[in-house]
Length: 348
Image (cartoon, rainbow, N blue to C red):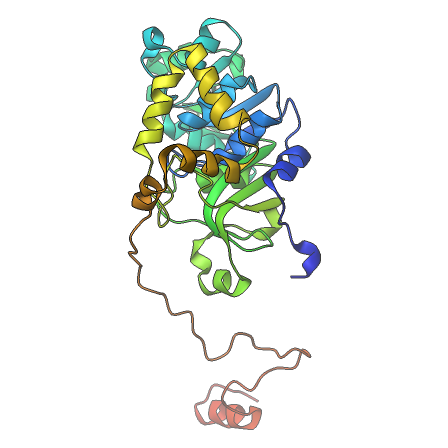
């Protein structure tokens, strides 16, 4: 690829350029390795009126809602520590009617993204949900949350959900190259489908690596460069959540957040210190080290556990040379013709 396809930029630039107010936004990560710095940057920039897709919202969704960014939420699970009594930013917003939420099962949420990824307009889902409140209770999606149609082949009633095609997906991965080829490994969940169903994709990663590293492990590339709009190198970009192969979840920081989110004033203080008070991830890590030192972070770093490499070797990589001429594949044309005649495979 040419240098003009280099998509490296800062988180500030990527969020400013590609996430307008009022858009639909998918949080690509599912439970682990969440794109925390991109979430924090959305809040710092004061994005408003977002419709957020999140398969499993913990700190990420709570922070976005506490920051006043979210108007509508599509999810399967949100932390909401303590439930209605304990409260959380999401619970308070629901009770204050400043947030609308549509609940789906994990299967249905993924089905919507898979449908969007493949260009479908809807997809059939398991009909057992018709006996639950998920089917009965609807907010901003109304009749479009589920539709029952007749199967064109059997005539039987089938339950369907609409495809999801968010305007933007934000996602954190282990590594990417400067062009945006994003590589991820570990529990996949809806990560690939959330990204590929979306119209724009912003990738943050622990490391930006050379293209030959990506080319040597193509099975790890879940998002190809041509679909990516921005790539940001962001070490510790998911902290306090974990990233396989880099660091474990920070239980201490997670617990501090859990203790803060139950009360609005405590949540505001936490946000002021860790989101608004830190202009970027480097400042966030600096604040963490000033308060708690480096020992915890060092203990969180993962110990190596490498998988066996795959051999992608071949005698040749193409049948053609750079000038478009056919390559000698180990035999000359005369030898090949003689062989075929001898074996009765070439007829005059």
